[in-house]
Length: 127
Image 1 (tube, rainbow, N blue to C red):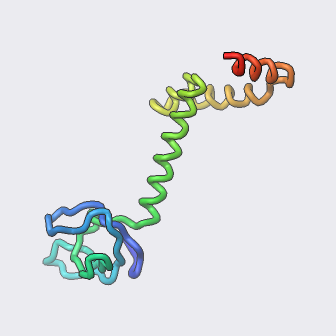
Image 2 (image 1 turned 90 degrees about the vertical axis):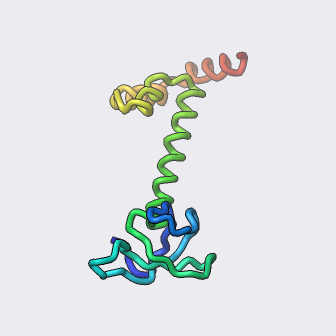
């Protein structure tokens, strides 16, 4: 349950009441009427209006930002796996399998000797 005064983002419009989807607002009241389908009353400063909304129509800004950060991290890891041709990491990210194999491969890369590391760098620089 959201707290009063919490900053929220409108993510849907279940009752098609022309909500400004993607805009932010503030939770100003709970709707306690059992005969009503709405859960909250929100204030949207850009629209200069109050809206009655359901719990599915709004999401806390913090949760939305955390989900976007997780998605961006996942996409960056996929890009890294593709650019380094790390097939095990790619399969782990896409399918969620072989967790230990990915971890051991990254630790093996760190345990290279200095001569092997310089050799790999020179090979990649030559290509």
